[in-house]
Length: 302
Length: 288
Image 1 (cartoon, each protein chain N blue to C red):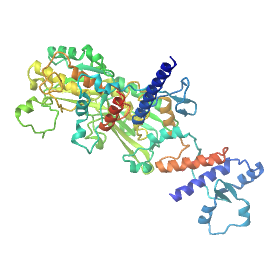
Image 2 (image 1 turned 135 degrees about the vertical axis):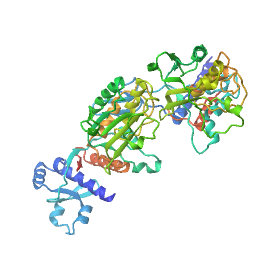
Image 3 (image 1 turned 30 degrees about the vertical axis):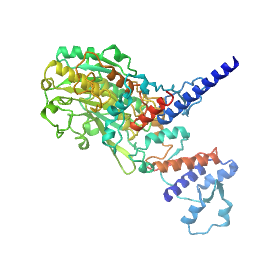
Image 4 (image 1 turned 45 degrees about the horizontal axis):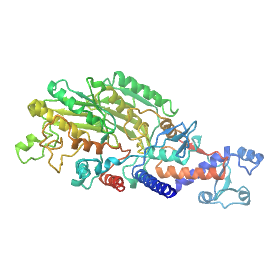
């Protein structure tokens, strides 16, 4: 955890060095530093990383940030990756986001719950059993989902081997062994160590969802949940897809879209546990409070 | 005159306080789900969500009327206790697991299998279309001739189906034959809030026997599926669909209607277990 925090502080200093213009510094000083292409890092981290004692020159470049003293290090090694500006959200929004994005089975594991997301676009294969109105309605819904965020692409393929998302019905060829004994409609997700989802199988029971309306509802409900292994909320009205109750009038609400977009935004750290997410939010908000004009970034290395 | 006005105002304020207190207590137990919209209601004081391109306001929900939980509303003095036994029976037998009250949150539209005897279909539809059922708040039952419009299908089968486990033991063979779930069962589909939205009722008419027996069974099993009620009835009442010795009356009994009125008095926004239900009952009756 300590390591993670240091790395995180580094990201803040890294980001601020190149983009932020501190109120108490003049533009010339900023230019000079930009040309030097170094970084500000916390002094505590400096002491651990470097054996050399701080010099008078180092102390001349100290910068105070909140309770931290930052020291300037020339030619500081840069991490590879893409920087994306931190996306600020207020506490009400984050309350709903945390509720749906971090699924856990028992309360004691809440802080360790991770957010999961699709790294690559979804390539959906629909079996022959999904046809007519449910197929059309589902495709329309999937298209609407694909328009919510640039980071969540949805497409359809006609060959199962080209897909990473299979939708089939009970009685079809069993594409996913984990669902063979599943009597009810359900899905099975696969994710890697970085909590990146890379495969899904969704199976519907057409005997139970016995007409087009029920089948369409089930397909959309399960598909939506599988977009992030979401936990559905018991605080939102049933018309929202992020709500855990049935409604005939379910539609992708403004809030659904905003939460989904945020989940796929790279202005947050991806694949983290709830506790890390909360720490990051706290730290970012603290930094913004101290330097309201600061621009903070997340570095995504993969 | 002034005294009367002061007294009236005092009573009114007191009643208002009680009502406000009750509503707050209900909200603490079962907070209303929030419906966010970009239309700002007049005198808005609720939750606000600031999104990138939008500001959303949570709609305020109206106060819940819990008078349906007052025993004085009904002809049966212990109706609430009887209801709780029927609705929450599993909690008395298995204290380890919570049992949550299930409800149909959407209108029930029934499709009857054309293979059912005509007489059974007609009488069943007439029974559950009775005007007295229309007075049960939050419960709507209608019929359709097309499966595509239904969310509740009643299907005949020739398979040997039972609504209990294979190893379930009866005292006598007669008890087994008379059991409501011998030759009939249902499968209900609910969301995470224990609200039903789809069901299939299977019945094996050949196994059950005459049209009258099939009708009686169908009426009973359907009634149970309205709340996944338990078969534990404390008092004998042959007019009731909940009684094993039900007399197959032409009209639904007052008792059965009362049970439905209690069950569907409010569509609960959250899971309701026996303990919460008891607290709601106390809340409803404390100022009775």
